[in-house]
Image (cartoon, rainbow, N blue to C red; front, side, top):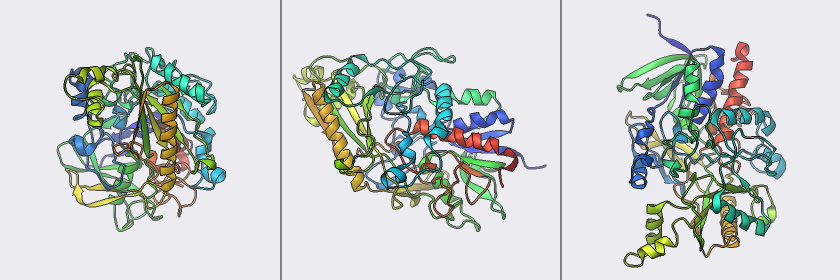
Length: 535
């Protein structure tokens, strides 16, 4: 019996895997996507339960080391001040993300030219522009056109209401003369493509039971499946296999019954994120690739970028209903996004204005900080803070440095015996200077808006390693990059990478929409070259 061969095999069913599958589906090729996690059942999301905050800190914890679900793999981040947080399921980390959806700026693709640091991308913003727009339509993005910080674009849905909280912090930015704008959000504000609009439940970061947050398990995969793409959950890829001609032959994987299988494929696409992709490439050793698949440059796993994160929170004298509304989406300020060397660093950061804490977190954080005591005064002090706080996150651009890297751990492994990734990372002086500046500016904005208390968090925040970028970088020179300008491996001509690991620089904003735009761009480039794809 002849071995089954698929045309395209995608590894990973998160943001980028879903986008590339959807785009390639119109070719009529047989496409299979393998995902080590399962489909999520929204009925099990914490927001369905009264104790959702406690429940969310366990089953929906952002840290795989704490969550420890069957689909997770451990991550050794003992040599990094920033812990890696992700989610393994159909939908990937979009299950838990905040859906804050800003685009990269044109300058993010030309950092070497503009500022003399890092490297330029081999593509630019305007090549990606039609794919940003397509992804906005596919995901269901809400926003307001006219933001002067970036090229004009029109999100398909109206923006999330600012609310009293947004109006209050906006007055602070106006007082200082700083840029602000309602942030693009992958959250639907009115019924869209069969989905119900946001109900302001609040706990977006533990999974949206309403389906208003655009995680790709509901925004992309149902459409891709109707177009013929097959999703195989609970399939953990062990390694990508290659032949004597340096061509990928498929993947070896553990199926849901724990049996090691092999699936042949004409094309293999990796969409495992900036930690999972280098982990799998490094583990896919062979006589042809003794240092890891597609790693003749020696750059697989190197140049890891994590977006160091700062934070400040303000308490206001009047109720703001700041506990109501999408958790991570309100306003942004990009006043300090572009380089001004007088600030003591190059490049810049995004200020992300987010909602206040829910009740249990308000009480626990207050007790921990000493601002809310136990005993008779507890409720009075709680009342002064709950629904009256505004948070500002500082998303600092992380420059690529080869010593920041993903390697295979010598001791830890997942339940199938595959070595865990180990993170070796240190925060650069440039990033620390940026965080100091950004946290101070966040506090300044809160004071300007009328906060009576402002608390700054020590930075970089430990559990903030959501943005996993740069470990299989894109470029035209095979000695200085892992994939070419349209995502194809320099070393293995039928191997493509579409996730955040191909990023050359990290920008200063949440990267999901840019990751998806790049994936759509790569898929489009593949379709244009189908007749000569491996030449």
